Image: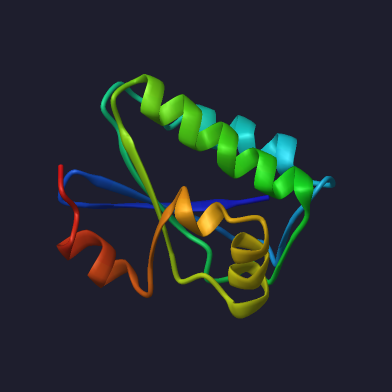
Length: 112
């Protein structure tokens, strides 16, 4: 798995280069993301390429949120494809994560 990383102002944009975030790669995802976390991190997870997510993928997102928030940081999601959006809504995670339609909108609306 590859994760493309870019910075916009103080925000770190991470874009997994996979079509599925699931049991086959969620541990690798966490390992790759862990190396990029710092106290007070502003993380924007661009899910443009992710068309499928299972409970392991959801668990990885929750793990990321908890890791970043315990270090006084913030996580947002953007570019969420319809199947993943429907899953997030089904398990009510759309109420936990702030989800923006694009990187530009997420960056411009960042509160910290």
